Image 1 (cartoon, helix red, strand yellow):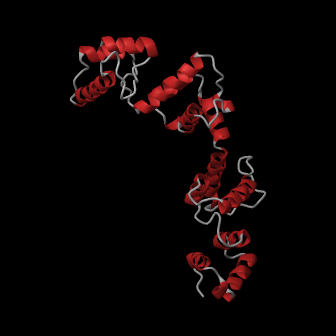
Image 2 (cartoon, one colour):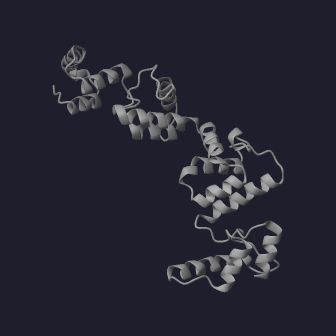
Length: 256
């Protein structure tokens, strides 16, 4: 306990890295064993022992319900703020290219899934819900497009979006054109590509989007004159179609 108090007095927390030895005492190993003991007592329905309560009095977050790695990074961010260094989460400061900036951006990205107490801790260093969402949009601009794409697909069932289409004021059509261009230049594992593919596997087909627009029109409004003419043209050119185009057509009841 004396070593724990001394470490806290110097660093302001008890989230010591695993290999810390304080004045020849294996403090980290002891703290990890106490965390295990605390969990065992909790599982058994037993209250914390006196020395566990004392640890909580030194640092309320000595044994957080979330990952200790998150807590260590939080203290690094807190120290950054307390040192009066430039810190503007919404303005991407520190830069996302730094370890601290990357952690803050990830915290903002996951903000709505964080424990309420984690959100409260972030608020103490200036990361409010508004700031978190602002940094989220600036650090990961493609995710804004994905959210709008998801909303569009929920009502239309696809992402064959007209080039000038707006979704809640967002230029979704133009954004998807840019994402298709990037998808054709990058790896299929690129996060935006994977996210959009999960929404609509044919958001970026190997054939032209004109065909995809016509397909969804025929799928949703098969009795219109334009849809009937298009379906007849697909029957005539069946053997020239991509196998996946043929498979899509069978989904709307069309066969060669």
